[in-house]
Length: 492
Image 1 (cartoon, rainbow, N blue to C red):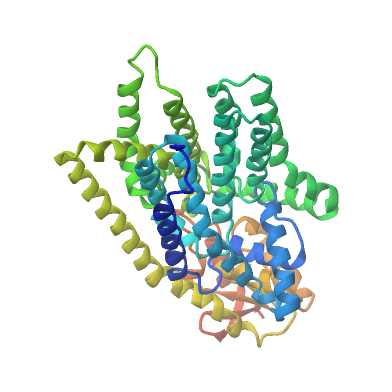
Image 2: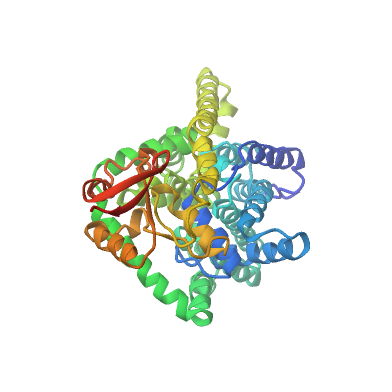
C-alpha cells in the first residue's frame, strides 16, 4: 500500500473538512469586512480586473461566472454580489484543508504528522476568519495545496508530463492569490531533489512563471485601456503610502505578534523543529534523505515569505499576510510534533497540552474580537447606506473606512453619481482643500464624517488624514446632518 496515498484516510480528512466548514459557517461575515472585499464584488459585477498582485484573474473569473448565473436565474441584484463570493469561499474551505492534508502526507508519508500540520492551518484564527469572507485567501490555499501535491506526486512516480502540467497549475494559482509566487523555486528544486534530468525542472519552472504571469498578460491584452493605467495609478499611490508609512523596527514586533496570532503552535515550535531536523540529519555523512530535504525546502520558503514581511509597509494593517508562510511551516511543525508524540514522554504531554491551550485561547480571542470589534464595525458599515441614502445623488463623501462602501455602490450602479474623497492611499493630503473647493464650485454637496472610529487603521501609529480633518474643521463651515456626519460649506 502506498504510504503517501491520502484517499483511504477518510476518517481523518473528512472530519478535517467538516471542521473547516463548521468554523467557516460560524464566523461567516455578516456583510463585507475588508476593503478588498468591496473591490472584488464590484469587479465581479463590472467584469473588470483587479490592480492587486497579479490581477487575481482566476478568482474574479469564476466568481463572475457564478454571479452571472445567480443574477440571471435567481435575480440576485448587483449590490448583493458579495454573497456569491462569500459562500463560494465557505464551500472551498473544506477542500482546501483536505488538499493540505494530501500535500503534507505526500511530503512526510506520515498520517499523524500530516494531521497535525493540517490542524495548525485549519485552527489558525486567520484561516478561520477568512474562510467566512469573500476574499481570495481560501481559494488561493486550495489551488496551492492541490497543485503542489500533484506536482510532488508526479515527481515521485516519475511522470514528467504530469509534473509539467502540475507546475502550470501551481503557477496559475498565483492568479487566485499570490501564494505560489513565494514558493516558485520549489518547482525546480523539488525536481532536482528527485533526481530528474535538469531539463525537466528548468522547463517546469519556466512554465510555472509564465502561468503565474498569465493573469496580468490577459488583462493587458484584453482590457489595456483600463488595466494598464489602473496599475500605474495603483503603484503611484502605493509609493505615496510607502513614503507616508515607512518601514521601521516596529515591523519586527508586528511580525512576531501577528505570527503568534496566526498560529501560536507554529510560531513556538518552528525554531525547535528546525533545530531537531538539523541535529537529527545533518551531522550524518549521508545528510537528510529525500523526505527531509523536501520538508526543509517547503518550510524554508514558508519561513522566508514570512520574514520578508518585515520590509512590507502594509504589514500593520494586514496580519492575514502571515497565512502565506504558515502553509509552508505547518508540515514542519506537524513532523516535529508527531516525533514528539511517539516518544510518549512527560515533555510530550506538557507540550501538547500547552499548544492545545494556546490554540484554544487563540480561537476564543478571535471570537471575542469578532463579537466586540469586527462585527459591530461591519454591521455599522452595512447600515451606513441608510444613513446617507436620503442625501442628494451627486453627493461627495469624506467618510474614512466607509470609502469602499461608497465606491462599491457607485461601481455596481446602485448609486452611480456618488463620489468620494478616498481614505488611505488616495488621500489628497495638502490638496484636500483644493479638491473640496472644486466639488463645491461644481455644485456638488460635500459631506464629512468626523467619527473617530472611521479614521483609525489597524496597528498604524499615526493617521495621514488627521491633518486634513483638522483643516476641514478650521477652514469650513460644518452643518450637522446626522450624528457625526456634517455637510461642508464655505465660511461666509
